[in-house]
Image 1 (cartoon, rainbow, N blue to C red):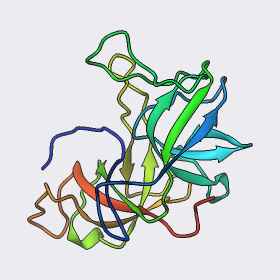
Image 2 (tube, one colour; image 1 turned 30 degrees about the horizontal axis):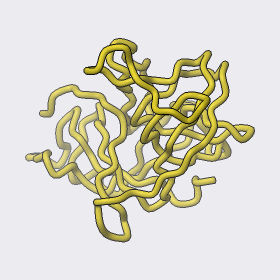
Image 3 (cartoon, rainbow, N blue to C red; image 1 turned 180 degrees about the vertical axis):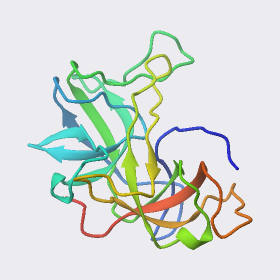
Image 4 (tube, one colour; image 1 turned 30 degrees about the vertical axis):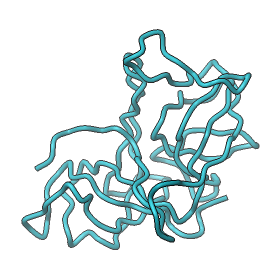
Length: 186
């Protein structure tokens, strides 16, 4: 069983080969969003602005990718007052969000349910948690059960290289590899 270490989505490789560079693009985030944004968060595009994808996000919410970096309204990198902590974009702050927006991008993320080889090819739903305001790290992870009104945004393509599932049912809190489900991208 893996340790509980919810840190959002991390790009691990492109589906077309290579892992040294991943495609990303800047998107605008307005103030007064429903949720803060931090690195590793899956995001949608609503009315032309970035919004955090949630457990109840429907397919019609235009999923665009995962947050790579955050910038202020002047497009300067956000920084935390303490150099050992990551910054996040609070709900009352406008800014810019750099998003990994390649629909063929594979990510590593923690799944809180028991997951093993028998789950490969299945789907996963986002389960959001509050951003750790002290560190700026997202606690977003995935689950294997349906959420009322939600659409699964990711397909499981394997266990992360660091994981070893010794049974078909696997273990809870395994890190898994996922890709966005085709057709959900804006």
